[in-house]
Length: 279
Image (cartoon, rainbow, N blue to C red; front, side, top):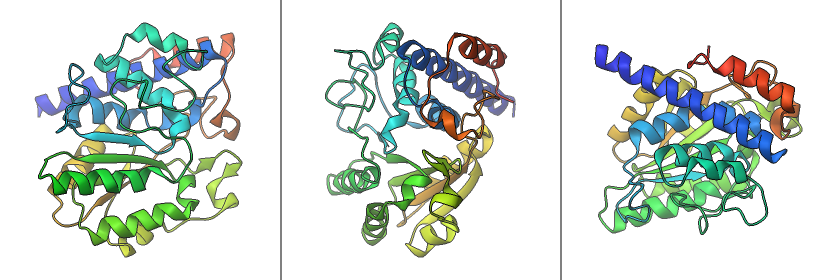
């Protein structure tokens, strides 16, 4: 039990550090997408610091696990965690969105070490994930594939075509993680284009569905464990989250989908995050 408590505390600390990097790099760049980056920080920290079979010294190792950030505009969260894991120097985060930087406004797999897919046009990530998971099966590799989508992104029809394919080919090495923060660029998902009940839709498409609080490390760890044990079915983790989580004035505010904090807002955000654990 003490080991579990220590692990959860460690992951909470990493998630908080990741949130600080997100705020800092977007503030320096004066542009970016903080809301949806902050909402998945706990999940991404758990993935990279507990779940994934990856090696910063061998970023192209064939038997590695793969992560696809389908909602590519939230790349600050992936850039931050890759730097924390040692794929490139933390100082590079200060170059976000600058001319010539490897860290562009949407992720480029040809430039960023440890990045498995170039993304940005919403709806495409799960299709690529299906291909990767199918390929791993064909080559008898133990690699697992994780695709992070936004709930608003589920309005894209291609997502459901990919979902059908994953079930048909019994891709139990594929996990979709839906960031259910209920907001997209134009407002609340329910107002723009209602998608509920999300769980019943994924189940109807032949997936194992796990619903969690996306900010609860214990639930996140348990969900990944459940996904690993699945036989013959892909897994969809529906993570209930808060857009802008960890920075009170950003939480559940649509405008923070794609707006950079000014100097005062940045300092306020750091002040809230310095406790090492988001409340």
